[in-house]
Image (cartoon, rainbow, N blue to C red; front, side, top):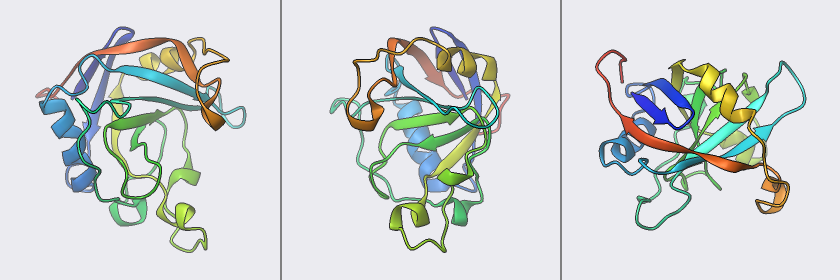
Length: 179
C-alpha cells in the first residue's frame, strides 16, 4: 500500500499473515479513508546509534470522527515482526490501547520489541510492529529532518511535534506490493 504525503510517497508492505489483528486494523483505517487528511505530526530524534535515528508518527490523534475502537495487542514475541529500520509500529499508551496512530522507524529499535523475560509489563509487551517500508525511506528521513516546535507537545513529547505537519493526502492499497 502507499501513503501519499505532501512530502512524497511512502510504499509499505503490511504483515497480514504474521500480525493479522494489527494489520487488519491498519488496513481498515486505509480502506475507510480514515488516514486521508491526517498528518505526520511527530519526529522523535534519538542522538545515539546510526543517524538519522528515531521515528516519525502519524495518524488520527484520537479524533472521535476517525478513531476506531482499540485492538488487542500483538507482541513481537508472537508475530516475529521486529522493529527494524523502516518498520511500521502501532502507537499506544498501554497494551490493548492502540487505535489509529502509528510510527515508522528510522533505525533498528530492538528496545521496542517484546521481552517476555522482563519483570516490567511494558517491556514484556513491547510495541506491535506490523509492516515495513519498501520504498520511500528518503521521504521518511525528510519528514524526520523537518523542524520541530520547541513549545508543542506535552510531557516527554514536548519539542517532538513538527512545526509544519506533513499531510497524508491518500492512503491506499496498491497491486504491486503484497499487503
